Image (cartoon, rainbow, N blue to C red):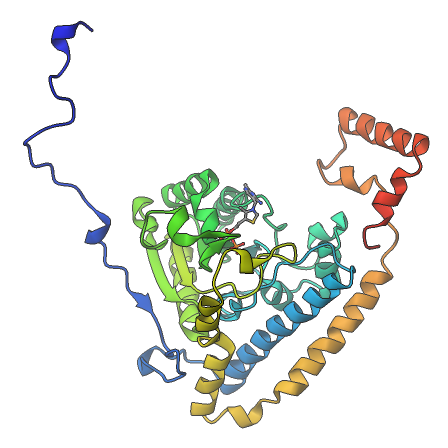
Amino acid sequence: MNEQSRPESPGSTDADVAAVSERDVDVATHRVVDADGSVVDPEAVPDLADDRFLDLYRWMVLQRTFDERATKLQRRGLLGTYASGQGQEASIIGSAFALTDDDWIFPYGREAGALLMHGLSMRDLLLYWRGVEDASRMEGANVFGFAISIGSHIPVATGKAWGQKLDGSDAVSFVNLGDGATSTGAFHEGINFAGVLGVPAVFFTQNNQYAISMPFEEQTAADTVAQKAIAYGMDGIRVDGNDVLAVYNAVATARERALAGEPVLIEAVTYRRAAHTTSDDPTRYREDEEVEEWERRDPVERYRSFLADRGLLEAVDEEAIREEVSELFDEAVAAADAYPERDVAELFRYVHAEPTPELERQLEEFRDLLDRRPEMHDHIEHRPKG
Ligand SMILES: Cc1ncc(C[n+]2csc(CCOP(=O)(O)OP(=O)(O)O)c2C)c(N)n1
Protein backbone atom coordinates (compact mmCIF):
# COMPACT_ATOMS: atom_id res chain seq x y z
CA MET A 1 0.00 0.00 0.00
CA ASN A 2 1.49 3.38 -0.94
CA GLU A 3 1.23 6.62 1.00
CA GLN A 4 -1.55 8.03 -1.19
CA SER A 5 -4.00 5.19 -0.59
CA ARG A 6 -3.87 5.57 3.21
CA PRO A 7 -6.89 7.26 4.81
CA GLU A 8 -6.05 10.74 6.02
CA SER A 9 -7.65 10.38 9.38
CA PRO A 10 -8.30 6.76 10.25
CA GLY A 11 -11.17 6.22 12.66
CA SER A 12 -12.99 9.51 12.13
CA THR A 13 -16.32 9.59 10.32
CA ASP A 14 -19.48 11.65 10.25
CA ALA A 15 -21.68 8.72 9.33
CA ASP A 16 -24.21 7.72 11.97
CA VAL A 17 -23.73 3.96 12.29
CA ALA A 18 -26.42 2.32 14.37
CA ALA A 19 -25.18 -0.20 16.94
CA VAL A 20 -26.98 -2.65 19.14
CA SER A 21 -25.83 -2.07 22.68
CA GLU A 22 -26.39 -3.86 25.94
CA ARG A 23 -28.55 -0.95 27.03
CA ASP A 24 -31.09 -2.22 24.49
CA VAL A 25 -31.47 -5.39 26.53
CA ASP A 26 -33.70 -5.27 29.55
CA VAL A 27 -32.99 -8.36 31.61
CA ALA A 28 -35.56 -8.89 34.37
CA THR A 29 -34.64 -10.86 37.50
CA HIS A 30 -37.34 -13.36 38.43
CA ARG A 31 -38.33 -13.62 42.07
CA VAL A 32 -41.15 -15.40 43.90
CA VAL A 33 -40.22 -14.67 47.53
CA ASP A 34 -38.69 -11.37 48.63
CA ALA A 35 -35.54 -11.04 50.72
CA ASP A 36 -37.73 -10.61 53.83
CA GLY A 37 -39.60 -13.82 53.07
CA SER A 38 -42.87 -12.42 51.73
CA VAL A 39 -44.34 -13.74 48.50
CA VAL A 40 -44.00 -11.10 45.77
CA ASP A 41 -45.75 -13.08 43.07
CA PRO A 42 -48.42 -15.50 44.39
CA GLU A 43 -49.15 -16.73 40.85
CA ALA A 44 -45.56 -17.88 40.53
CA VAL A 45 -45.50 -20.11 43.62
CA PRO A 46 -44.92 -23.58 42.15
CA ASP A 47 -47.73 -26.05 42.37
CA LEU A 48 -46.05 -28.50 44.75
CA ALA A 49 -47.58 -30.71 47.44
CA ASP A 50 -46.77 -29.74 51.03
CA ASP A 51 -44.37 -32.63 51.53
CA ARG A 52 -42.45 -31.52 48.42
CA PHE A 53 -42.13 -28.00 49.86
CA LEU A 54 -40.77 -29.61 53.03
CA ASP A 55 -38.40 -31.86 51.06
CA LEU A 56 -36.97 -28.80 49.40
CA TYR A 57 -36.17 -27.38 52.82
CA ARG A 58 -34.64 -30.63 54.01
CA TRP A 59 -32.27 -30.67 51.03
CA MET A 60 -31.23 -27.08 51.64
CA VAL A 61 -30.39 -27.90 55.26
CA LEU A 62 -28.58 -31.02 54.08
CA GLN A 63 -26.45 -28.93 51.72
CA ARG A 64 -25.58 -26.51 54.51
CA THR A 65 -24.83 -29.20 57.06
CA PHE A 66 -22.74 -31.22 54.61
CA ASP A 67 -20.71 -28.11 53.75
CA GLU A 68 -20.08 -27.37 57.43
CA ARG A 69 -19.04 -30.92 58.23
CA ALA A 70 -16.85 -31.31 55.13
CA THR A 71 -15.06 -28.02 55.83
CA LYS A 72 -14.30 -29.16 59.39
CA LEU A 73 -13.12 -32.54 58.14
CA GLN A 74 -10.69 -30.81 55.81
CA ARG A 75 -9.41 -28.68 58.71
CA ARG A 76 -8.59 -31.89 60.57
CA GLY A 77 -6.49 -33.01 57.60
CA LEU A 78 -9.00 -35.67 56.53
CA LEU A 79 -9.95 -34.19 53.14
CA GLY A 80 -7.56 -32.82 50.53
CA THR A 81 -9.58 -29.66 49.92
CA TYR A 82 -13.26 -28.70 49.82
CA ALA A 83 -15.38 -26.16 47.93
CA SER A 84 -18.38 -25.06 49.97
CA GLY A 85 -21.71 -23.92 48.53
CA GLN A 86 -22.57 -21.83 51.59
CA GLY A 87 -24.87 -19.01 50.53
CA GLN A 88 -25.78 -20.79 47.28
CA GLU A 89 -28.16 -23.39 48.74
CA ALA A 90 -31.22 -22.04 46.92
CA SER A 91 -29.43 -22.16 43.57
CA ILE A 92 -27.93 -25.59 44.15
CA ILE A 93 -31.03 -27.27 45.55
CA GLY A 94 -33.76 -25.38 43.67
CA SER A 95 -32.17 -26.33 40.36
CA ALA A 96 -31.55 -29.98 41.25
CA PHE A 97 -35.14 -30.29 42.48
CA ALA A 98 -36.40 -29.55 38.97
CA LEU A 99 -34.39 -32.41 37.43
CA THR A 100 -35.08 -36.14 37.16
CA ASP A 101 -32.66 -38.98 37.90
CA ASP A 102 -32.53 -39.64 34.14
CA ASP A 103 -31.11 -36.20 33.42
CA TRP A 104 -27.34 -35.85 33.33
CA ILE A 105 -25.66 -33.41 35.70
CA PHE A 106 -22.34 -31.82 34.78
CA PRO A 107 -21.06 -30.54 38.13
CA TYR A 108 -18.56 -27.83 38.91
CA GLY A 109 -17.86 -28.53 42.56
CA ARG A 110 -20.14 -26.80 45.04
CA GLU A 111 -23.32 -28.80 44.49
CA ALA A 112 -22.97 -31.66 47.01
CA GLY A 113 -26.71 -31.69 47.78
CA ALA A 114 -27.66 -31.84 44.10
CA LEU A 115 -25.47 -34.88 43.49
CA LEU A 116 -26.64 -36.67 46.63
CA MET A 117 -30.26 -35.93 45.65
CA HIS A 118 -29.70 -37.66 42.31
CA GLY A 119 -28.04 -40.81 43.57
CA LEU A 120 -24.36 -40.22 44.33
CA SER A 121 -23.24 -41.77 47.62
CA MET A 122 -21.89 -39.53 50.36
CA ARG A 123 -18.92 -41.86 50.72
CA ASP A 124 -17.93 -41.35 47.10
CA LEU A 125 -18.31 -37.60 47.38
CA LEU A 126 -15.91 -37.61 50.34
CA LEU A 127 -13.53 -39.94 48.53
CA TYR A 128 -13.50 -37.51 45.63
CA TRP A 129 -12.40 -34.67 47.93
CA ARG A 130 -9.75 -37.01 49.33
CA GLY A 131 -8.29 -37.24 45.86
CA VAL A 132 -9.36 -40.83 45.17
CA GLU A 133 -9.51 -41.19 41.39
CA ASP A 134 -12.00 -44.06 41.59
CA ALA A 135 -14.61 -41.67 42.96
CA SER A 136 -14.65 -39.67 39.73
CA ARG A 137 -16.61 -42.54 38.20
CA MET A 138 -19.62 -41.12 40.10
CA GLU A 139 -21.10 -44.57 40.34
CA GLY A 140 -24.87 -44.99 40.62
CA ALA A 141 -25.72 -41.50 39.39
CA ASN A 142 -25.99 -39.72 36.05
CA VAL A 143 -23.24 -37.35 37.08
CA PHE A 144 -20.22 -36.44 35.02
CA GLY A 145 -16.81 -35.81 36.66
CA PHE A 146 -16.23 -32.43 38.35
CA ALA A 147 -15.06 -29.72 35.94
CA ILE A 148 -11.92 -28.72 37.79
CA SER A 149 -10.61 -27.23 34.57
CA ILE A 150 -13.09 -24.35 34.56
CA GLY A 151 -15.66 -24.48 31.77
CA SER A 152 -14.25 -27.70 30.28
CA HIS A 153 -17.52 -29.57 30.90
CA ILE A 154 -19.62 -27.19 28.79
CA PRO A 155 -18.73 -28.55 25.32
CA VAL A 156 -18.86 -32.09 26.73
CA ALA A 157 -22.38 -31.48 28.04
CA THR A 158 -23.40 -30.15 24.64
CA GLY A 159 -22.09 -33.38 23.13
CA LYS A 160 -23.99 -35.48 25.65
CA ALA A 161 -27.15 -33.47 24.98
CA TRP A 162 -26.69 -33.98 21.25
CA GLY A 163 -26.54 -37.73 21.93
CA GLN A 164 -29.71 -37.47 24.02
CA LYS A 165 -31.41 -35.72 21.13
CA LEU A 166 -30.28 -38.33 18.58
CA ASP A 167 -31.46 -41.11 20.91
CA GLY A 168 -34.88 -39.48 21.26
CA SER A 169 -34.34 -39.41 25.03
CA ASP A 170 -36.64 -37.42 27.29
CA ALA A 171 -33.76 -36.40 29.55
CA VAL A 172 -31.65 -33.25 29.48
CA SER A 173 -28.04 -32.38 30.19
CA PHE A 174 -27.85 -29.92 33.05
CA VAL A 175 -24.64 -27.94 33.47
CA ASN A 176 -23.66 -26.18 36.67
CA LEU A 177 -21.11 -23.48 36.08
CA GLY A 178 -19.77 -20.39 37.80
CA ASP A 179 -19.70 -16.83 36.50
CA GLY A 180 -15.95 -17.22 35.95
CA ALA A 181 -16.60 -20.10 33.56
CA THR A 182 -18.57 -17.77 31.28
CA SER A 183 -15.28 -16.04 30.41
CA THR A 184 -13.65 -19.19 29.05
CA GLY A 185 -13.35 -20.17 25.41
CA ALA A 186 -15.02 -23.48 26.21
CA PHE A 187 -18.18 -21.60 27.27
CA HIS A 188 -18.38 -19.91 23.88
CA GLU A 189 -17.73 -23.09 21.92
CA GLY A 190 -20.05 -25.27 23.96
CA ILE A 191 -22.98 -22.87 24.17
CA ASN A 192 -22.68 -21.78 20.57
CA PHE A 193 -22.86 -25.36 19.37
CA ALA A 194 -25.77 -26.12 21.70
CA GLY A 195 -27.71 -23.26 20.09
CA VAL A 196 -26.83 -24.39 16.58
CA LEU A 197 -27.83 -28.00 17.22
CA GLY A 198 -30.90 -27.24 19.34
CA VAL A 199 -29.90 -29.77 21.98
CA PRO A 200 -31.71 -30.50 25.26
CA ALA A 201 -29.23 -28.69 27.51
CA VAL A 202 -29.68 -26.26 30.38
CA PHE A 203 -26.67 -24.12 31.25
CA PHE A 204 -27.11 -22.99 34.83
CA THR A 205 -24.69 -20.26 35.84
CA GLN A 206 -24.38 -19.63 39.54
CA ASN A 207 -23.22 -16.05 39.54
CA ASN A 208 -21.80 -15.98 43.06
CA GLN A 209 -20.05 -12.65 42.33
CA TYR A 210 -16.50 -14.02 42.39
CA ALA A 211 -14.12 -16.25 40.49
CA ILE A 212 -11.76 -16.86 43.41
CA SER A 213 -10.67 -13.24 44.13
CA MET A 214 -11.90 -11.78 40.82
CA PRO A 215 -15.17 -9.83 41.20
CA PHE A 216 -17.80 -10.31 38.52
CA GLU A 217 -17.51 -6.69 37.31
CA GLU A 218 -13.81 -7.15 36.62
CA GLN A 219 -14.01 -10.35 34.61
CA THR A 220 -16.68 -9.22 32.15
CA ALA A 221 -17.90 -5.85 30.88
CA ALA A 222 -21.39 -7.32 30.39
CA ASP A 223 -24.02 -6.30 32.95
CA THR A 224 -25.48 -9.78 33.17
CA VAL A 225 -24.67 -13.37 32.22
CA ALA A 226 -28.22 -14.00 31.01
CA GLN A 227 -27.94 -11.52 28.13
CA LYS A 228 -25.08 -13.54 26.65
CA ALA A 229 -27.69 -16.12 25.59
CA ILE A 230 -28.98 -13.79 22.90
CA ALA A 231 -25.73 -13.95 20.97
CA TYR A 232 -26.08 -17.73 20.79
CA GLY A 233 -29.65 -17.62 19.54
CA MET A 234 -31.08 -19.02 22.74
CA ASP A 235 -33.20 -17.83 25.63
CA GLY A 236 -31.61 -16.36 28.74
CA ILE A 237 -33.28 -16.34 32.14
CA ARG A 238 -32.06 -14.26 35.08
CA VAL A 239 -33.30 -15.33 38.46
CA ASP A 240 -32.74 -14.41 42.10
CA GLY A 241 -30.42 -17.26 43.05
CA ASN A 242 -31.27 -16.94 46.76
CA ASP A 243 -34.95 -17.59 46.09
CA VAL A 244 -35.30 -21.36 45.91
CA LEU A 245 -38.80 -21.28 44.39
CA ALA A 246 -37.78 -18.84 41.66
CA VAL A 247 -34.78 -21.03 40.84
CA TYR A 248 -37.00 -24.11 40.72
CA ASN A 249 -39.40 -22.34 38.32
CA ALA A 250 -36.57 -21.15 36.11
CA VAL A 251 -34.99 -24.59 35.76
CA ALA A 252 -38.32 -26.40 35.34
CA THR A 253 -39.22 -23.96 32.54
CA ALA A 254 -35.79 -24.19 30.93
CA ARG A 255 -35.86 -27.98 31.11
CA GLU A 256 -39.13 -28.11 29.18
CA ARG A 257 -37.85 -25.70 26.55
CA ALA A 258 -34.63 -27.66 26.24
CA LEU A 259 -36.58 -30.86 25.62
CA ALA A 260 -38.44 -29.03 22.85
CA GLY A 261 -35.09 -28.31 21.18
CA GLU A 262 -34.35 -24.92 22.73
CA PRO A 263 -31.38 -24.92 25.08
CA VAL A 264 -31.45 -22.21 27.75
CA LEU A 265 -28.81 -20.20 29.60
CA ILE A 266 -29.80 -19.31 33.17
CA GLU A 267 -28.08 -16.85 35.47
CA ALA A 268 -28.83 -17.35 39.17
CA VAL A 269 -27.69 -14.27 41.08
CA THR A 270 -26.27 -15.40 44.40
CA TYR A 271 -23.23 -15.07 46.65
CA ARG A 272 -20.42 -17.33 47.77
CA ARG A 273 -20.27 -16.72 51.52
CA ALA A 274 -17.50 -19.18 52.30
CA ALA A 275 -13.94 -19.09 51.02
CA HIS A 276 -13.42 -20.15 47.41
CA THR A 277 -12.07 -23.44 48.76
CA THR A 278 -10.44 -24.39 52.03
CA SER A 279 -7.16 -23.14 50.50
CA ASP A 280 -8.40 -19.56 50.16
CA ASP A 281 -8.59 -16.54 52.50
CA PRO A 282 -11.36 -14.24 51.22
CA THR A 283 -10.64 -11.52 53.81
CA ARG A 284 -7.75 -10.53 51.53
CA TYR A 285 -10.02 -9.38 48.73
CA ARG A 286 -13.48 -8.51 50.05
CA GLU A 287 -15.01 -6.47 52.84
CA ASP A 288 -16.87 -7.94 55.83
CA GLU A 289 -19.78 -5.54 55.19
CA GLU A 290 -20.38 -7.13 51.81
CA VAL A 291 -20.49 -10.62 53.32
CA GLU A 292 -22.79 -9.40 56.10
CA GLU A 293 -25.13 -7.84 53.58
CA TRP A 294 -25.51 -11.18 51.81
CA GLU A 295 -25.95 -12.97 55.14
CA ARG A 296 -29.07 -10.87 55.55
CA ARG A 297 -30.30 -12.35 52.26
CA ASP A 298 -29.77 -15.89 53.52
CA PRO A 299 -31.57 -18.34 51.21
CA VAL A 300 -32.40 -20.86 53.94
CA GLU A 301 -33.90 -18.20 56.23
CA ARG A 302 -35.87 -16.77 53.33
CA TYR A 303 -37.40 -20.12 52.54
CA ARG A 304 -38.17 -20.71 56.23
CA SER A 305 -40.22 -17.50 56.19
CA PHE A 306 -42.12 -18.78 53.18
CA LEU A 307 -42.85 -22.07 54.97
CA ALA A 308 -43.98 -20.16 58.06
CA ASP A 309 -46.36 -18.04 55.95
CA ARG A 310 -47.82 -21.20 54.50
CA GLY A 311 -48.27 -22.76 57.92
CA LEU A 312 -45.75 -25.49 57.17
CA LEU A 313 -43.03 -24.57 59.62
CA GLU A 314 -44.50 -26.61 62.49
CA ALA A 315 -43.80 -29.69 60.38
CA VAL A 316 -40.09 -28.84 60.27
CA ASP A 317 -37.68 -30.09 62.91
CA GLU A 318 -34.47 -28.43 61.83
CA GLU A 319 -32.39 -30.00 64.60
CA ALA A 320 -33.61 -33.46 63.61
CA ILE A 321 -32.64 -32.84 59.96
CA ARG A 322 -29.19 -31.66 60.99
CA GLU A 323 -28.71 -34.67 63.25
CA GLU A 324 -29.86 -37.07 60.56
CA VAL A 325 -27.45 -35.53 58.04
CA SER A 326 -24.63 -35.62 60.59
CA GLU A 327 -25.23 -39.31 61.22
CA LEU A 328 -25.15 -40.00 57.48
CA PHE A 329 -21.98 -37.97 57.30
CA ASP A 330 -20.32 -39.97 60.10
CA GLU A 331 -21.25 -43.21 58.35
CA ALA A 332 -19.87 -41.88 55.06
CA VAL A 333 -16.56 -40.92 56.73
CA ALA A 334 -16.30 -44.42 58.22
CA ALA A 335 -17.02 -45.97 54.81
CA ALA A 336 -14.40 -43.70 53.18
CA ASP A 337 -11.87 -44.70 55.86
CA ALA A 338 -12.57 -48.36 55.06
CA TYR A 339 -11.90 -47.82 51.36
CA PRO A 340 -8.93 -49.91 50.20
CA GLU A 341 -5.48 -48.36 50.24
CA ARG A 342 -4.64 -46.88 46.87
CA ASP A 343 -1.79 -47.66 44.56
CA VAL A 344 0.01 -45.16 42.30
CA ALA A 345 -1.41 -47.03 39.30
CA GLU A 346 -4.69 -45.25 40.05
CA LEU A 347 -3.19 -42.03 38.71
CA PHE A 348 -2.92 -43.60 35.27
CA ARG A 349 -6.00 -45.80 35.25
CA TYR A 350 -8.67 -43.41 34.02
CA VAL A 351 -6.81 -41.53 31.32
CA HIS A 352 -8.00 -43.94 28.60
CA ALA A 353 -10.28 -47.00 28.63
CA GLU A 354 -7.17 -49.08 27.84
CA PRO A 355 -3.77 -47.75 28.93
CA THR A 356 -1.54 -46.73 26.04
CA PRO A 357 2.04 -48.11 25.83
CA GLU A 358 3.33 -44.64 26.75
CA LEU A 359 1.21 -44.56 29.92
CA GLU A 360 2.40 -48.07 30.84
CA ARG A 361 5.97 -46.85 30.41
CA GLN A 362 5.35 -43.79 32.61
CA LEU A 363 3.82 -45.95 35.32
CA GLU A 364 6.86 -48.27 35.25
CA GLU A 365 9.15 -45.25 35.46
CA PHE A 366 7.20 -43.94 38.44
CA ARG A 367 7.34 -47.31 40.22
CA ASP A 368 11.05 -47.50 39.51
CA LEU A 369 11.54 -44.02 41.01
CA LEU A 370 9.67 -45.06 44.16
CA ASP A 371 11.86 -48.18 44.43
CA ARG A 372 15.01 -46.14 44.11
CA ARG A 373 13.87 -43.32 46.39
CA PRO A 374 11.60 -44.88 49.02
CA GLU A 375 11.40 -41.58 50.94
CA MET A 376 9.12 -40.33 48.14
CA HIS A 377 6.45 -42.67 49.47
CA ASP A 378 6.16 -40.32 52.42
CA HIS A 379 4.83 -37.57 50.19
CA ILE A 380 2.16 -39.88 48.82
CA GLU A 381 1.21 -41.35 52.17
CA HIS A 382 0.95 -37.94 53.81
CA ARG A 383 -2.23 -37.46 51.84
CA PRO A 384 -5.38 -38.70 53.56
CA LYS A 385 -5.94 -42.38 53.04
CA GLY A 386 -8.88 -43.24 50.79
C1 LIG B 1 -9.17 -23.39 32.94
C2 LIG B 1 -8.91 -23.01 34.36
N1 LIG B 1 -8.38 -21.81 34.64
C3 LIG B 1 -8.15 -21.44 35.92
C4 LIG B 1 -8.44 -22.30 36.94
C5 LIG B 1 -8.21 -21.88 38.39
N2 LIG B 1 -9.52 -21.66 39.00
C6 LIG B 1 -10.08 -22.58 39.81
S1 LIG B 1 -11.59 -22.12 40.33
C7 LIG B 1 -11.50 -20.66 39.50
C8 LIG B 1 -12.61 -19.65 39.56
C9 LIG B 1 -13.91 -20.21 39.15
O1 LIG B 1 -14.88 -19.23 39.32
P1 LIG B 1 -16.37 -19.46 38.91
O2 LIG B 1 -16.46 -20.13 37.59
O3 LIG B 1 -17.06 -18.16 39.05
O4 LIG B 1 -16.92 -20.50 39.99
P2 LIG B 1 -16.91 -20.35 41.58
O5 LIG B 1 -15.66 -21.04 42.04
O6 LIG B 1 -16.95 -18.91 41.92
O7 LIG B 1 -18.12 -21.05 42.07
C10 LIG B 1 -10.29 -20.55 38.82
C11 LIG B 1 -9.89 -19.37 38.02
C12 LIG B 1 -8.98 -23.56 36.61
N3 LIG B 1 -9.31 -24.45 37.55
N4 LIG B 1 -9.21 -23.90 35.32
